[in-house]
Image (cartoon, rainbow, N blue to C red; front, side, top):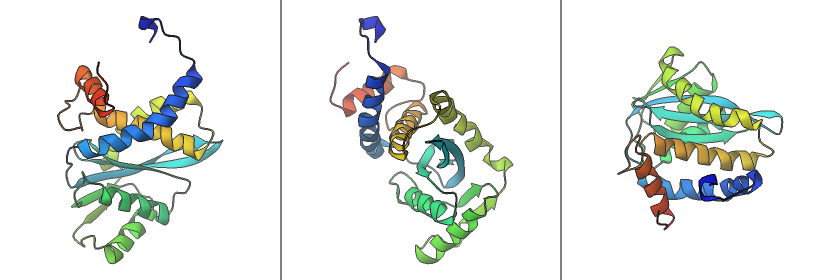
Length: 199
């Protein structure tokens, strides 16, 4: 913006993020490319109003983001909510294998979903820390953006901001149909077209 002699206060940018990040995610969802059936699931910590919250995230074996979910708790109910959200996404397929860490909530949540929601019994749950290196590495992108901000002031502002971070990460990774990874101009053009703008 400075190149165009525009001076914008950081609070204005913050308001733009709070308003536009959820809308960007909503408009990007129909354009997400399909993913594969090998999932990596993990959670990372995000500070909200001085309290640690849990950002659940899932990737496929190619590193594509499947879903994300912010929760105040790290229990079976939170894990179940996250799995149901991921299973209901239009760009995901029923998983063949789900790799998680040693969190005891995951097996319970998956078992409940298999009995009540019809997830096939053939879906294998692997609790192996080193197999989740892919998602641990992917957490760094989010942490790099969250850490300088020193936390969020409310759950709602945290969720809206994280929606923006995650969807921009998906665009950057080339997960949108017709937008290639590393194509900066293509990514900018894609976002402009979503909002009916020209560049």
